[in-house]
Length: 185
Image (tube, rainbow, N blue to C red; front, side):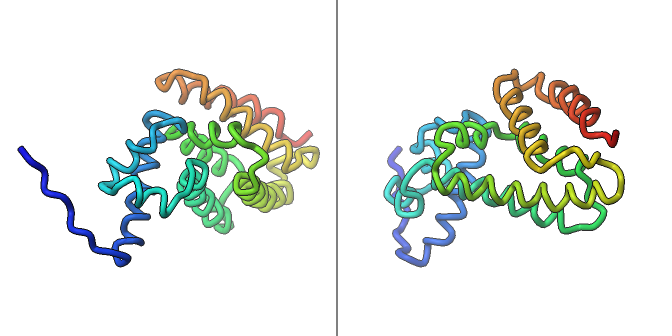
């Protein structure tokens, strides 16, 4: 059975194709990781390789587009006054449980300015929330933004190497250890 090629809609399809590529990458990376073939992303999005590379010149650019949305969601979340560090870390754990590709991307090229930008945004989110939590007396003054970032990085690394079925329990145990360390003294 012959397949009928899609009609070329030209430049007007650009924003829709970009959105489809980001969603497809989120699904593919969550399933098979950061090293997934980009052809699988293009195929899942229903676009050609040329369209993928027009929007995202390399794997890191595509991954950053996916994870930029995750960071934006965390930024919005932290803006709510009732948000706590526990809540933030639970959201980070949920995102990590869904996709370890973010960790793979960060460790693959940690000095890439595009990757550093995501790290800086995440640090700013943590810093804002940490200050609020310390002011409320829920987190010790001895805890720094770098400490929380290190804890999240350690947790993400462990989760990335854990079997998918074991990740929720590993995350719960790790967060219990971090929580004990972050408690006011």
